[in-house]
Image: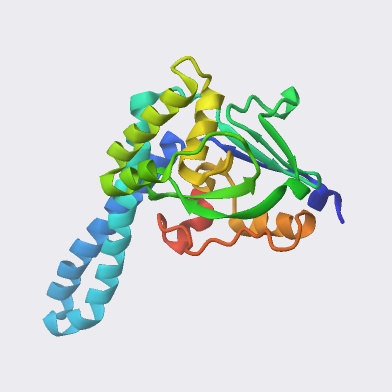
Length: 245
C-alpha cells in the first residue's frame, strides 16, 4: 500500500461557496439563453424544416438550465443571507475506523464526538435527508434517542421541507434543550433523519467523490461496506464535473 493510499480520507462538510452558486447560476442562465435563442436564430437562418434536428439540442440545454438555475440561486442566497458558516461537520475514514465531529475544528485538535473502529460499524449507505439530499451514513450501536414511528410519519405527511425541518427542530429541542451545543444538535439531527450519528452530506464536501470513498472502504472496511450511490449527482452537466467540484 502506498503512502497516498494509506492516508486518511477527511470529509469536511463545508457547504458550497458563494462563488460556486454564482457560477452555476450564470451557467444555467447562459444555457437557457442558448437553448431558447439558439432555436429561433437557427430556425430563421436554415428554415423551420431543419428545426426537427435542432429542437432536441435546445431542449437538452434548457433541461440543464432548469436544474442549474434553482440550485445555484439557492446556494448563493443561503450564503448571502447567512454569511458566516459555523464550524462544519466532518467524517474521517482511515485504517482504524471512522471518526466523526459535529463541530469540526481541525484534525490538530484530536477531539471527536465519535471514534468507532470498523468492528463497531455494521452497515453503510446513502439515505434521504433534509431537502431530499442523499447523505452517506455509517450505522453503529448507540443509546442516543430516535424519533418514534409517529413522528417519522408526521414528517412524511408534511411533505414540504420547511415543515419537516420545523418538526425536527422541535424534537431536538425536546431531547437536548435549547442550551445544547452546535455539535450536539447536529448529532441529534443525524439521529432524527438517519437513525445514526455518523452521517455526512457528500454534496457539500469538497472532492468527496463516492468512487474515492468506495476505494477507501475496499481497502480498510469489512466486506460489504460500500459507498455506491444509486443515482449520480444531478446538479451539473457531466462535462462541467471537474470544473465545478
